[in-house]
Length: 85
Length: 196
Length: 249
Image 1: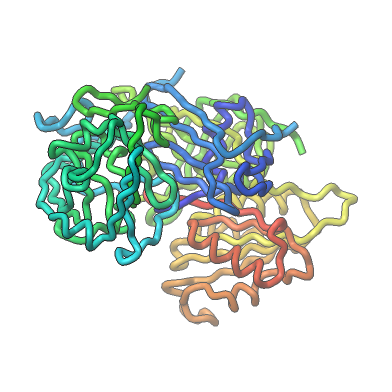
Image 2: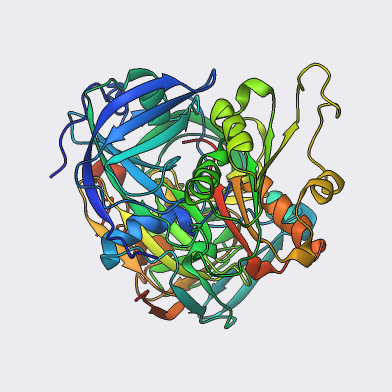
């Protein structure tokens, strides 16, 4: 299963946040690593997109899109994101 | 407002009465994962069944010794692809639960790598599910869940947890990973139970 | 750097041309485009008559102000979107694009009076697209800092923007292009075709002591290998920005 990085999430997350958050920083709640959204390890399939911490592999955020447009956004592994100014 | 893209046909749909609603027949076997493929040798694989009354453990050899069966199953992925009449080999959950007592009506499947999915015991027992070691006549490839995965073909295939390492019974139908993230708690393809 | 708003836009295909045997260059006219930095990408969304939608990301080969954007799409044979873009899309067609995206993987020329670090770009195959945009932006700005681009391709026919890259080596005195062929090299090429190795990368890449800003783009295994080698050679992890492509879409 080929992984990508947070660049693959930029568009989908822009639909959630109203802005491009690729350069936003976040802290992993499992290991404390701080990194950019762009640097996360992303698994993207038709099931959904999952971004994992590059340091410890914990799931940071999830994005599921159903055909027809329903969307679910989760941040199980990030306490807060610093939004780019 | 999206508009139709001239000339873009999307996916071909082959109508076949054996397909649940919204499904398309495929001949390959797509791999969909939410994380890296775990690296577990069959010799190191362990399965744990945990109930409120205690734990039961099996190695791969011990599990196979319970009795392997040939299974022919249609599998339906919620992402709309279906494979018909796939050959599998595995051990029925009925044999695994044979000497096990529980008052719980539900179970959470746990996988190497952290994946979880919830299934009612009614959907696991009475010949409805297996711990599968082989698919298409070959040992299960790691990409497809090897050395062993849960096989529950009458539900959408995200319930057939890859890299299965155990089942924990529970009194409530608590949501597993995808179920927390928008997918249906039950997942019956014939009722198109795809999302919340 | 200008902060540019990201939005969905309607793009009209203005021009297409064959880029390589498997790839097509597509020029889009996007009247509402806010401009983009070099390295940005867009999500392209197609809608079928039954409402089914497919969205894929493509890097922009162009940067700057203006309403024209350029993509170079490589066909993934089993893909859903790239075969349509490479074979079926026609001049005059309209598609939806979301962008500009990718605020982290961008390169901007240094401010005129600033002392700036050199830039090292490393491309695997079609990963050259956003890096070509960066090299072109460097030339357009007359940026005086050194910029090197290493491109790994299978054969000379697989190199995107061949002529434009050659033109840049003439037009931009600070631009250096290094090509590595992994399957077949041109006749009389000094180095036989073969896999890119850590040693070869060390030979052509700007030394870590120069503290270059490094950008790596290509398939995930390529990016991972390059990143490991660069860090092993002393480049700081924070100095390396990466963008990974997937395989089968």
